Structures are given as C-alpha cells and as structure tokens.
Length: 126
Image 1 (tube, rainbow, N blue to C red):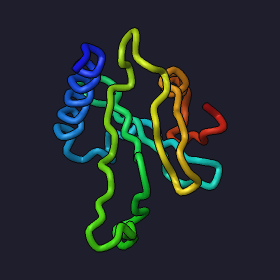
Image 2 (cartoon, rainbow, N blue to C red):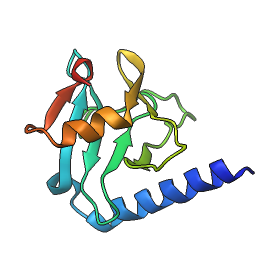
Image 3 (cartoon, one colour):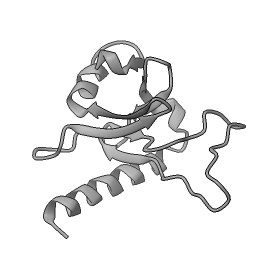
Image 4 (cartoon, helix red, strand yellow):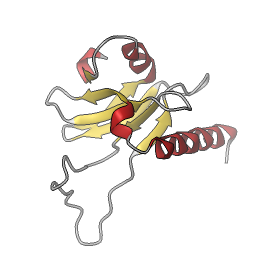
C-alpha cells in the first residue's frame, strides 16, 4: 500500500471520527450541495477536525420512508467522508453522485463557498 493511500485512509478515518463525535450533524451542517434538479449531492460540516465533506457515491434514499431499491441481497455503498482541507498533493476532485449521475466536486470551490453567506449551493455555482 502506498504512502498516498495510507494518508487518504488516515484522513478519512479522522473525518469519520469527527462526524461521529458531532452527534446531531444537522446542527453542524455549514453547506448543502445540490444538482440543478435539487438532488442532494454533498454536505460540509463544521467539526473539531475542520470542515468535513460527506458525499453519496451511489443511489441513496431521500427521506425516512424512501428506500433505495438494491435488490434482495444488494447493498448500497457507504457515504464517503473526508476532510475538506486534505493538504498538498491531494486531488482537488471529490467524487459524488446524485440521481442525475456521477459528479466531481472541487475542494477548492467548496472551501471558497464556505466563506460566502448561504447554506445551499448548486453544482453550477461551484
């Protein structure tokens, strides 16, 4: 396993621990990212470890009674959690997904958007 993948795993583990420590993550949400059709793509949360981005890498439910059709033995992939500030040498692109299909989100654009007012941003604005 290379040093880069070890760094990525350590960073993602730190982000997961920071999200778990939040408890009520809704109160800590700083930014919600949506596609032009208002599908939820990602969210950025304020944590003790710094801003954490959570993306959905595949089909997901949209509410408490909306279940993903994964088939009898299917399983959905877990959400991707990572520190927004991943340091130098890290790819700026964060993979995500909504019902419109796969998308890439720029870490740099998300960080810049955190400085602006408003909690919801469309992909076209990034």
